[in-house]
Length: 461
Image 1: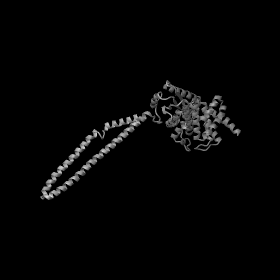
Image 2: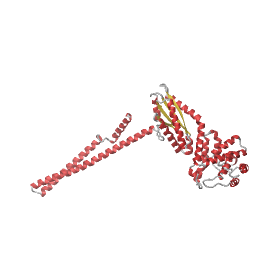
Image 3: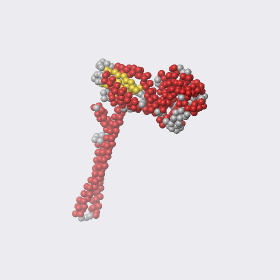
Image 4: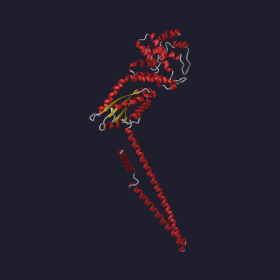
């Protein structure tokens, strides 16, 4: 606080030196000038008044008694006129002084405000409002000389890249600010919270032992799990903790220990967090369109039966099951107005809709074990004749599972109500499939689906 006052005082002094202090030499010159000006006007007016009035009076009047009486009146007129003139001059000058002082005071306040803003920005993260890494490192250097124990927490957001890729950086920034706010609300009362960089945060806790630090971590993760269920944003958080208890312990070692624990935590969480992200997105998609979950379950059942008829291996059948559920996961990036539009899409809206296969590919690709499924998702709108998207693949260049799901997906879409049309009858849908076999669909697989899968379904009814 004392240093801040010194800085403010130095700032004021600097400004006075540049602009001039009204109580010092800069304005003393102005006072003298104004005093000389008023005196000169007074003497000039008096000289002209006396000289001119006396000559006129002596010319017009010869009676000394009358001259004396007029001279008295003339004196009073002179006093009143010169008094009014001096009042006007002094008033006008004092008003200028007041205006100059107000402007100077305003400039001082503005300069202080800019100075404080510069200091604030130099020690704070613009996005989250937390302290930045520069400030934290300065505090970290002082931590070793303070009271022990000293604890440190490193936080890392899982899934931020996926949020940025799917929802855009604005949503990612919102997620960063949300996590920063919750960490700060819980931890700032015990220590210093800062943004370490990117998707990482750090907390320095002087006088806090390891057990209490872990309690703070649990409080934060519990709070963030509640927020996740409210926001539907697919992200979680990992942390690493370290505590310095001995005077000869190193701050650098404490930081490294926290980083090592964070790294181990992320290694053990990697697979589960990736699956968690995908499942979270899938659930969010179901909430955007109530038919999506039912559609996925129907596709899973029909594609499983078709896969058996085609002769898929056990591993391919498992991939097809996952593929059927996740094939439209990229639609999470499509706005509800486009996704559920009752009429025909505009060209711009259609281009947005077509992106969902690429978005879905990027989402599922984040899980190495699902890389094949990601490949199928990318290709599930390719057409046998090469007129599909996004790559324009044709024939057997289209992955087998993508060709299978394309047929089942089209059939289920035709026999289901859509915002833009009513459901078709099953026999009409079959006619449509056969009409597009060899152009949109693999003709061999299409024939198997109609003759073996759908025919069995009809017989069983």
